[in-house]
Every structure is written in structure tokens, then in C-alpha cells.
Image (cartoon, rainbow, N blue to C red; front, top):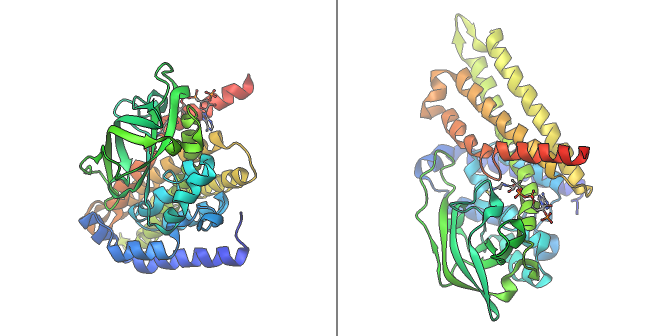
Length: 383
Ligand code: COS
């Protein structure tokens, strides 16, 4: 349900102020310490950020897609690690439940996810099932009124902090592809669930990722998402369609931030007796970044509106993610170039963003997977 325009305006102003006053000043500290301060997490909870997309009847703000991408874009004006703290509750960690959960499952978990008391994680990827997500090997064997879960999930965002895991496992061993996979809601504290050591990453310090290991984990029958076996892959794909639009919006936001920083620097920095912004070769970089960012912003707005109108957006969400994440990669590269030596050293923070944005082209489906989704959709329609 859409917010009334005044409430939405207030929310966007609150997010903008919070990003500007609370988050931007501590970006380098969070980058160095690989940790978001507790008081910032507490503020993000009390401001309702963990519940942005959780329906109002379960205590969230119930933002529709058009509203969500606006908030995400503004959160892109600071280090992506901040958004990641609540990002799984807004996206992949809660949406299987929102989209396909039973009423009882929603009532059990969503109110606490909305407040941030419960942090959710999305456990799809495995050592042998990355881009080929339907190749899930983790097993869920029915034994009376429980399922016994065994397997390893890899590179799971927010798993070190997670309380509730949405886990994709094979309930039908005879079906090797997507039709044998089911989704489960597993409490992280269940016996047999253990977390790997957090990985050291290229960027986005402050956001954490690790493997999750399941050894004879007993998941009650009512933890099966929607109470239906073998439809988990479709749930995962629906969740990812939405997540891909969210990541696209973040990419637009980060690009806006980098363009603003680059413009400011180019107008201040003098070489050959004048600000480098006066040189046409620097102007070309600024103009290309601005143009591509504007294009991505329009794409995201259009796709989000179409999703809100009930359209199947799988292919256009993939187009948005492909274009917006590749775009922010180019913008970050130009930002380093415009800053010259200052772009390469730590003090200006530009190199940190350059590293941070690299992930956008990989998670929630690589650029190559987005191309596959788009082309397959074209072929299907043509047939
Ligand atoms: N919404 C709803 N259903 C969808 C869907 C979507 N967006 N995309 C696919 N499906 C359904 C299909 O309709 C099909 O259903 P049926 O079995 O009823 O016919 C089923 O899911 C399988 O679809 P498909 O045949 O396209 O699956 P593939 O194994 O070929 O895989 C890709 C498709 C490659 C697109 C998928 O594996 C993918 O997105 N991979 C990337 C995974 C990813 O993003 N990982 C990141 C982890 S989270 S950080």
C-alpha cells in the first residue's frame, strides 16, 4: 500500500538527514573497524528502517516498490555497508515470508523483523550452486513431523548477525532441478546450525558474510514456507526480482554520491592555472557519469512502478540490475580518475566506494545471469 505523499516526504527527509548527519561522518571509521557502532544500529531500528517493506499489519512501514527504491537510493549516498545492516530484513531475508509465507508464519516472525529484534538472512548459495541456483544440494528429508536438514550454504550476507534463516533445500531427491527445492524458516539457534568464520572481503567493511553449516538440523513441518513442498525455487526467484530492483536503486544512489564528490573536487582542484572542471576531458567524464546515472534512475523508477501495478518484472528488474550496477562501476572508476592520486589513496574515501560497488555486479545475480534472464525472456516472447 502506498504511503500518503506527506508521510513519504517526511520519511525521505528523515532518511536523508540520518545519512547526512549520522552516517557520512563515520564512513571511514566503519571502513577501518569493519563494524557499525551499536548506537547507529539502535537508531536504524528505532527509525523503522528494518521494517521498511514489512506490511503494516505486521508492524512495518509497508513501502511499495516505488517508495522502497526512493529510500534505497538515498541510502546509497553513504557507504553501502550501512544499508546492508537492515538490507536483508527489507529484502531477501524477509520477502520469502512476505510473498509466500502462511499467515501463521508471518505473525510469528514479521513483527520482530520489522523492529529489528530478529535479523533475517537468505540461504540459497552453496559451494556448488551459485549462479546455477537450481543445483541446490542441501537436503531436507521428511521424518515424521520434522525435516532433517543437511548441507552448507556459502557467502551468506548478514549470517553472522542473523536470527532467522530462509533456507533453500532439496525435498525431492529424485528431482535434480528447480522443482525439487523447498524453502524453510530456520531459527539460527537450532541445534546443528553453525556459522563459519566471517570472510575478509574486498569492500563493504561493516557488512558481514559467512558460511552456514547445517548438520542434522530438525526443522518442524510448519517451518516449510507456505506449507508447500517443491515450490521454493520460485519463491527465491520472486524474492530476487524485488531484490534486484533494490540493488539497482542503491547503485543509482552511490553513483549520485560519487558524481557529487567528483564535481566538487573538479571545481576545487586547480591544474594548469584553472579548476580541472574547466577541462573538456574532465567534463566528458562528469557528463557521461551524469547521463548514465539519470538513465538508470529512470529505469528503476519505471520498473518499480510496473511492479506496483502488478506486472511481472523479472526481465526488466534484470535489465535494471545489469545497467545500474555496471553503471555505478563505471562511475566509480571515473570518480577515481577525476580525483587522480587523491582517488587512489584512502583519505578521500573514493577508493573505498570503488571497492564497495564491485559487489553489486555479483550478488543477487551476476551481470551475466541478468543478461541470461533478459535474453531468455526475449526469446520466450518471440516464440
Ligand atoms: N518469478 C517466478 N518464477 C520464476 C522466476 C521468477 N522471476 N524465474 C524463474 N521462475 C520459475 C520458472 O517459471 C520455472 O518454473 P517451472 O518449474 O514451474 O517451469 C522455474 O522457476 C525454473 O526456472 P528456470 O528454468 O528459468 O530456472 P534455471 O535453473 O534455468 O535458472 C536462473 C534460472 C539462472 C535465472 C536462476 O538460477 C538465477 O537467477 N540464478 C542466479 C541466482 C542468484 O541470483 N544468486 C544470488 C544469491 S542471493 S545473494
